[in-house]
Length: 255
Image (cartoon, rainbow, N blue to C red):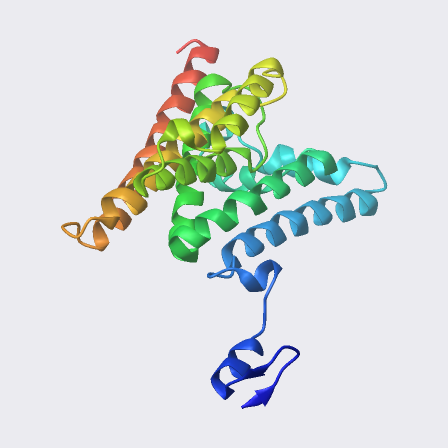
């Protein structure tokens, strides 16, 4: 027996009392590795834009050129620059835009990684990114779109569907307030915020969440099915983006 502040404890109790208590990231069941990596890439690209701006001797020129060369718009996709569907999701218009997106990404990214791990988080994130790109091309094909908002809304959609799969009705989800608020903000500032990107990303993320957290959780579903279907969906989104872009460009030049 070991003497304690009150009475005596057995050796087993003493060992249990000496256990460490973790807070912050250390307390998470699954370390948010993917979320941290995506945030780091976004921040690094933003800093690169600032450095290029300074090297050119014109404030903001580096960021502006990166947005022009790698942002999403129908003309670029029509020209065969499919990489814009991905690169546009890692560019931001300013420090406030970046900061807000990274904060929301940190919140929802951690949640998704706790639910499915880094592999499924990556699949959900990029499927939502492609879906957000298609949404932006449908609603604002002639506008230059940048930002991780589409993919982030996809993470929110995945969390919402994942909660439902775990028995939490959508009407009781704490996410509803966030989604309603952001829907109002998106519609109010639709001239500067990509409504198509947000809506497309949310739908894509919700679909991916259903594939991995609902369909994939059923014992009768082979483990490869959600991954295979996600791959097919991504290919379909890319093809649809090309079709939409070509249609818009042809309409502009009179074909």
